[in-house]
Image (cartoon, protein in one colour):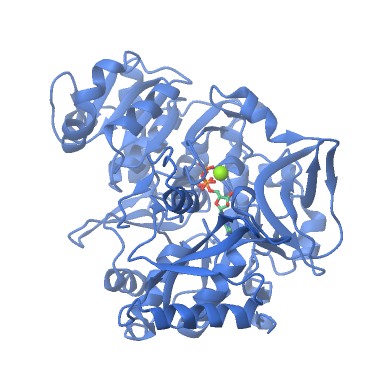
Amino acid sequence: MPLPTIEKAARVRDAANMPDYDAYRADFSWQDAKANIASFADGKLNIAHVAVDRHVLAGHGDQIALRWIAKSGEGTDFTYAELQDRTNRFANILKARGIKKGERVYALLGRVSELYIAALGTMKAGAVFCPLFSAFGPEPIQSRMEIGDAAALITSTRLYKRKVQGIRAKLPALREIFLTDGEVDETLHLAPLMETASPAFDTTPMDPEDMALLHFTSGTTGKPKGVVHVHEAVVTHNMTGRIALDLRPGDVYWCTADPGWVTGTSYGIIAPLTNRTTMIVDEAEFDVERWYGSLEREGVNVWYTAPTAIRMLMKAGADAARAHTFPKLRFMASVGEPLNPEAVIWGNETFGMPFHDNWWQTETGGIMIANFASMDVKAGSMGKPLPGIDAGIVEVTEHGVREITEPSAMGELALRPGWPSMMRAYLHEDERYAKCFRDGWYLSGDLAMRDADGYFWFVGRSNDLIKSAGHLIGPFEVESALMEHPAVAEVGVIGVPDETSGEIVKAYVALKSGHGATEDLKLELIGHARKKLGPAVAPKDIAFRTNLPKTRSGKIMRRLLKARELGLPEGDISTLESDEQ
Ligand code: ATP
Ligand code: MG
């Protein structure tokens, strides 16, 4: 059965920031995109200036930049002028404590306002910001601080005592620790310093190639890498916010990602502020009622979330959504993992608009392939490359990289290097970095195909591809077929070694409540998959799990399913969210 296409009405297309993809793409240049945000003389710029100061200078200081919702539900607003004041004070504090240009300032905080102030204030001072997930344990914190030679850390008393105190002696480069809410050992209490710091600061003009951010990858496929991004990346953040997320000045925008991973910074801080939106930040974790309540109460216009969250909302049922109305909602997008067609269709039925899937990586710094507001959505596709981005499907052999132009042929997803937010290094891993670039391509490590209309379709990570009885099987296809079954809430598919077939397809399934993990259901699911996919591709075996192992950024860790299946070492599990096996 062909997958459905969700067509866009002419009025929706015409109202989009990019009404005509082909025309916009043909006209686009990164120089023009840069001119849109140009800030200082001599081509210098600073992400924080583009995000905050620029808007205050233009007379928008009274607009709300950040609405922070505490766990208690209480909201606190920061206007652009207030955000400028706070970030200036933080930059002054860093300078006064001797933190120099290019030095790394880490944050280990939940989604509290100080995290956002620290990110922008650090960049204002010319230092490099590196966020860590607050849920990391001491060991992953230590290794990430070592890789980045952390000079300063901002955290809370509770997190300091539980996670940093014990490793501090092992981090000789760490000179300053700021605590948001107190003072322990040789630390500094940030609140009184903020009170007395000057609210005036001249944001440091940076070279476009100066380092601004250090981000660690999600660790889905192995040990996380430290990815370096520069100030010029803001050109991509700003442009993709406008084109891929359809952001407009004054929009209320909610990105549900934590700044502990790249989405929460590129699209949870920089893109929304540089596009002068009001961003919503919720301190609390996922909760169905709370999320629907926030969408409705805050009048969210643009919502950016992830497949795991969407699947949890689907699991809770459409009635939970229908108890609310979302008249202000205009655009919904998703990233981080393949978005099953089922989820796109559910979005369309439940909210009257589809989720728009988009694809990118920590390494690309910003959205590279997307379903745009003006474009029909083919459910299950990642969409088309952004203007200014050349994407291809390639075959990599020992002879080099060859582009595959035949439609719907599978290969590695590759990009032509040179966009502003492309990573500039894997910190201290030059060889690994060099391996990503070959014959004029950046190689993503993901497998995909491009159809005759130019839409890209995700197949799987190259490590996850299953070779069974002469067939090459992408796990996403099998997972999406099983997701269509009403009992299935979540599914991860791997290849298990087999003497006759090489590998057999095995699925791990988490069920929706009200469905028992029975032998009958297992057979029914296998039958369902066979009907959809044929016997060669359908899983031969299914195991039921209460939860699947996931990274903190919400990605199913298929390598862990496989290691556990085969009794092999689990490898680096620093980003694993606690799971039940
Ligand atoms: P690591 O590189 O440490 O193994 P990771 O690749 O999961 O972790 P991220 O950079 O956070 O780290 O994630 C990027 C990856 O997420 C992509 O390479 C891709 O595999 C997956 N991904 C992101 N968006 C999508 C999408 N829309 N559809 C399918 N996969 C996606
Ligand atoms: Mg990766």
